[in-house]
Amino acid sequence: MASETFKNEKEDRIYMQRCFDLARLGAGSVSPNPMVGAVLVYQNRIIGEGWHKAYGEAHAEVNCFNSVNTADQQFIPEATLYCSLEPCSHVGKTPPCADLILKMRPKRVVIANIDPNPQVAGKGLAKIGQAGIEVIQGVLDDEGKWLNRTFFTSLEKKRPYVILKWAKSKDGYLGKAGQRTPISNPLTNRLTHRWRSEVDAILIGANTAQIDDPELSVRHFTGKNPLRVLLDGKGSVSSNRKLLADNEPTLILGAPRSSLNEVKRLKHLGPKISIQAILDTLMKEKRHALLVEGGAQVHAQFLSSRLWDEIRIIENPKLLGSGVLAPQLPENIKLVEEFTISSDLISVYKTSRKPPYLFDTEPEPLTCFSTTGSPL
Ligand code: AOF
Ligand code: ZN
Image (cartoon, rainbow, N blue to C red; front, side):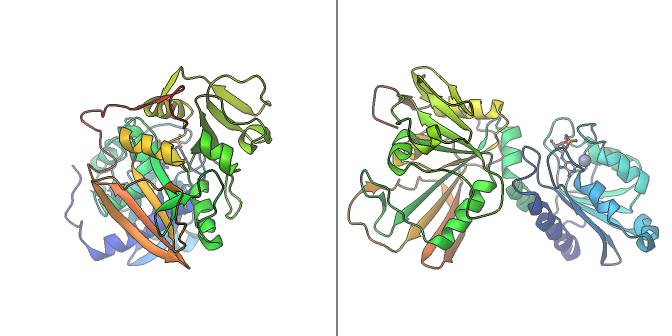
């Protein structure tokens, strides 16, 4: 049984925070794996650091031990290994980190979170503890779960982590009716493109595709493009819109179409597309983080389904006077972050109904999209 004796020790929290900072360097490259960082400390000095850099590649612990220079290797048996996630005990794409730890034998192993992957789920820490190495769990536990909220949600709720994002004017509009209306400032666009690079899929509805004709790519930040997902139940989006016409992949959820180029895929989910069906489809595609970029009706559907985890709002001081109203913020949300970028106010909320990494005990009733009703 892991001890929590030192849970509040300042030193442990400082080095765990360093693990998180390292872990975040893997953002956008490790999915569907978690972001993990590891730090080896001897007498309050970091002698090794590593993080999981890319899916399928070495785990954080391996990179951490490999980074220790020859002169410091003698100190490993007296050192503490900090790791943001429980070391794995299974053979996946790489060998078990728990075995490596038994070989290197640091004095203590301190972790934030138990790995929710059923192949690990406490077995890694137990193996290390049973070999006589002191193990401590739960240091900055909540912060670790927040960092890896996508990973925890996908394993525990069996659905992708859903982020709803919109930009609005000071007087509460998403844009002028029927026309593309840039809202956020160019500096904020760098952040929103970073957000895109950190998710696995980005979804919009038919109205937004038709009116805004977005490319949904990562251009103002360095990183990979997420899979573009177009919700087009009625097949109403013109075939000359970028999502349908360019040479980048798009997953189209909607009515069959006569012609599409070879990088587009179409999935016909029946006459009604529920949010659950969208999320199930993405889960099968191993797309565990979804950014929903509107428009208003798509956001409304996600909000009423309650199948969302986080809302990110950009508010620009301009006044539009009229147009498409931004969604109302739902009840039971908690502001987790608020900051400004030049003229824009960025607010990040999470659902406060329950921690985002726990199962819903009772699934909420779903509102379905209608292919004959109002446009998406
Ligand atoms: C660790 N350290 O840095 C990470 C862990 O297919 P694999 O071998 O890459 O294993 C992936 C699983 O390993 C992943 O689902 C999660 O349970 C764990 N990730 N574990 O000890 C790491 N990234
Ligand atoms: Zn591992």
